[in-house]
Image 1 (cartoon, rainbow, N blue to C red):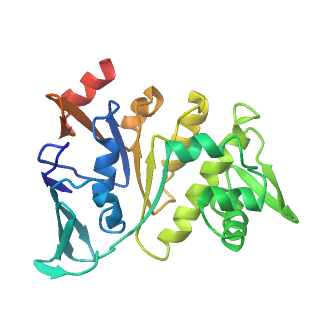
Image 2 (cartoon, rainbow, N blue to C red):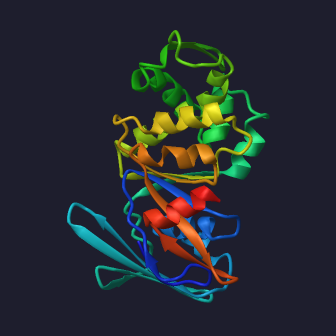
Length: 267
């Protein structure tokens, strides 16, 4: 993605791999950058504020394609391969959950139930049951089977799957999320966008979740925005890292340079 002009982000290029970490201070523009990445599937995110912006996003389908996105106040235009289109091209599906969703749902929903998983994923109960049924198939090293008792679910974990017993109950949300994303990815290109998901999550659980996404079995793309030290330490484990560097009072620079990443780590 190339940011051409933006009211927070300076012009710059963002190259994405399968696993991506995005770092930045609060109000540095992480969420705004994620909105640009989601602009080909969720245009309403760009219209929250009447501010001008322009970006270009390229993808393979299977040949290289390019979309230009321009916002001028309340006016939004898409151009795909130099041709104006009325609707966004939607070349990929975006599954997105942010910190507010996690903060409210971790302690309110029942992880070991079909309704709990359904509400967390934002899907119907049939879809949630399908996701749960596929968890032992897609996570054979973690769990051996699941059993349904009405709406309740009993998960049988592999011995020594976790360092701490309570970790399984916390991690089950992310297991369901990963399996749901993979099932979607087998139908259409899918990007899982996580905006500061580690709020109130123990560092041991954070590392476990990061290792979960590092599995080579997944075909969906992950973009995880965080300022967690645990996430920062995992950047050499197959993750591409990007940092938003404050420049002046109101703008940030997009950087994937090692020097900028080291600087933010030192801070």
